Length: 484
Image (tube, rainbow, N blue to C red; front, side, top):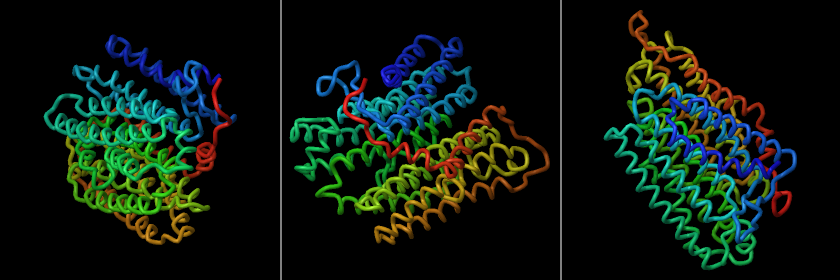
């Protein structure tokens, strides 16, 4: 079964990307949705298989490493594969209605969308550092193209800034990979973990990889490229970027940390990364509070939420606290992806309804467009970390990790970050509940556009009730070397 499922996750999106170039979306409408359904079913099937049988290494085409490409199919990888399928399917369904079919740029959305999906699955499943780099670059090029979609001057500026930042980050990571290969003679994650346990890598390698991946993840103060890109992109694109794209570089960061960085250089670098994450939470929240445009509020919120992810490193210093920190950060990543995708899609609906990007233009929306506002509000519940959402459970686990590790200062950050989130999100609700005349002058998006973010927001809330299921799968190890 796995022999059919695993290659399909990589090659099906690539095949559909090529078909999207050759066949116009309006003519190949059902072909595109068939590909999305197939990819979602394969992702769910692989997740259920690994949940039942455990993870393994899969040799693509039957060629084992180092001659062949070895895929790392563990609980963490397949959970991210399933998350990608959920968010990408929702974004595609929304884009199919949201994007103006009369404009020529829509046809470029679909091949870029499929290339992005292929790159994401390539990163989640890659078992060696070079294929992680290949997947990361495919994601970057597709994401930059999606930001520039439409060709407006502002979008092109944001896309170029994103491109230059991403290429600089990739250069740092690639230099680290070259140095690791020269030092150890291997690029396999499993092989490097065993070698690094005997002889830790040089500090320069860790610093290059950390700097490059932190730039691509938009860790404060390297976040300058993220708000313009996420704020100006089309709403389905913003959902993909915030929910999935920035998570790919963090995923590589975490894999490398667990394999290489927790040894001789763990403590000081971990505290530095935690401090930068704290800066992101506080500065990102403050800047979100000051934005006049709705999507820029949500974009700066992403900077703040990314900061929480980097608490993984100072709190993962051994013992039970390390496991709590790992669970909390992974659950935060999942809940944030669902909630932020829902929030960007709901924001797109609200902007479409009021005909303006400004927060103060939302006056009267609560009366005449309650459904889209309610979707935005449910997503906000998870981002603020209120019970019973997945965001609340994630922050509760991080709080417990802070207490058990004796690092009480991170508790203050969790509280301060939650209060800032409440301030900038309630500012949006305050504007929407102001009355503006007695007539309904708003454009009403189709019910399909409103349902999609609602489903994602409900999933973010529901994650709080069923957190033990994804956490149990995330912790699944490999059942052995080699696949079949």
